[in-house]
Length: 97
Image (cartoon, rainbow, N blue to C red; front, side):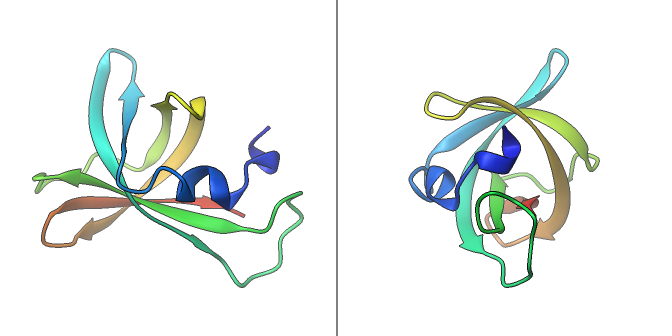
C-alpha cells in the first residue's frame, strides 16, 4: 500500500494537521511540505518526501515508526526522522522512496 501512495495525497493536505502516535501517546503535527525526490526508485509512484512540523516544540521525539492519521489518508505506519527546528517548531521528514 505505501508503494502506491502518490505525492498528491500529501500535497493536498499541506497546512493541515495529522496525528502522530505511538501507543497511547500522540502529537498533532502540521504537514509543512511535500516535494518530489530526484533519485530513482522501484516504487509504483515517483519518490517524494514530506516534512511535518510539531509547532512550538523544541525537543524531538525519537526517529522510528509511528502511526500517522488523517481523515483523507487513513492510518499509515511511517518512519519519521527528526531534521531539527525551523523557527516554528520541530520538523520531521518522511521519505517515500
